[in-house]
Image 1 (spheres, rainbow, N blue to C red):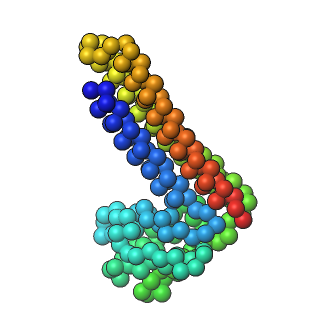
Image 2 (cartoon, rainbow, N blue to C red; image 1 turned 60 degrees about the horizontal axis):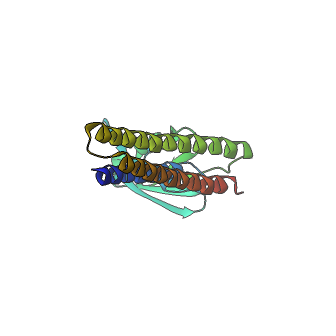
Image 3 (cartoon, one colour; image 1 turned 135 degrees about the vertical axis):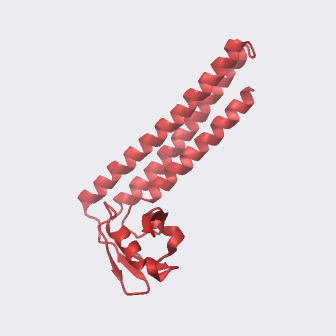
Length: 186
């Protein structure tokens, strides 16, 4: 039972770290990154659809993204969705077959705003890891209460859970440091 609780906590914490890394990838840096556009929701025939499902996204130059829709009828919807993205500061150009998005240079002030945003996202993910630890501790306490485990086993499992939590919080912090350095690089 204890191993099962620890395995579940490990899986969930690992997913939280991956989610943090994905969130960080959506924050704009000095270079254009196709991942920033993956989750933009486009109103496609009345249904919110991720941009990645509606077309291919390429990065031919450092600050340019080219979106080639699979359905040419979606061009206007994609262009509107990209234009409406807050914090992007880009103007999409539609030539009838593709959409070319050129990202402007980031100012120092804008870079600092993005660093704050990334730190907020990191804290949210750290909180989710800690919540997983809390839930795991509650499950362990329930096992103890029901008489399925002894005090020594419970203490060992809680220490192991705390060590797991520290490992995954540190992984989020490392990803944050890398993203912060990337953002502040001129």
